[in-house]
Amino acid sequence: MFRIEAFYPPRQADKLFAALLHGLAWQEEEIVLFGRPTKVPRLMCWYGDPGAHYAYSGTPHEPLPWCAPLDCMRRELEQSLGLKFNSVLANLYRDGRDSMGCHADNEKELGRNPVIASLSLGDERLFRIAHNKTRHKLDILLGHGDLLIMAGALQHCWRHSLPKTRQHKTERINLTFRNIKGVITPVQHNQTVIQPG
Ligand SMILES: O=C(O)CCC(=O)C(=O)O
Ligand SMILES: [Mn+2]
Image (cartoon, rainbow, N blue to C red; front, side, top):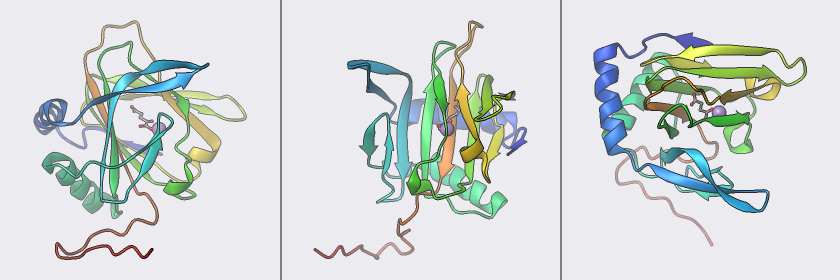
């Protein structure tokens, strides 16, 4: 895992933050917890190539088609990292009460040792990782424009979360660029997918 501070410098990060805050199709999701429908404490949306299905909050999600700012960022990340991403999960934490529980991104559609590029915009928040066996914890401060790369065996040995905080916090957007396996990436605009049966 590594962090690149200010992968997007402040002025560029400001523009991206405003474009995404107002331009993405933010949704409030519900999950069933102890038999009760419960609101997920953040807003979310999923963008990607056609066929990049992903299950979160207990439901499979169809990707929304790439919008200009997300597609641009994906290409910039691909160039810088020498990797391919076909999808992105966007999370909007409205204030310090919004959070993400402890989890690992270990779904089989991401493959065995996925590389996930996690970009943060807006207010800074603590990102916490905890070792599955030793319970060792590490807090990493993620600020405006910072990029965190999760790779290798991280998803097998560690879990991560974005804890709630009592400190005053304003909006934060996190984008996790991912590569869903088995998706045919369209290479030509006149290419169509033919599904037998
Ligand atoms: O908001 C973050 O920094 C973490 C997001 C995350 O872990 C996820 O989307 O799977
Ligand atoms: Mn995650």
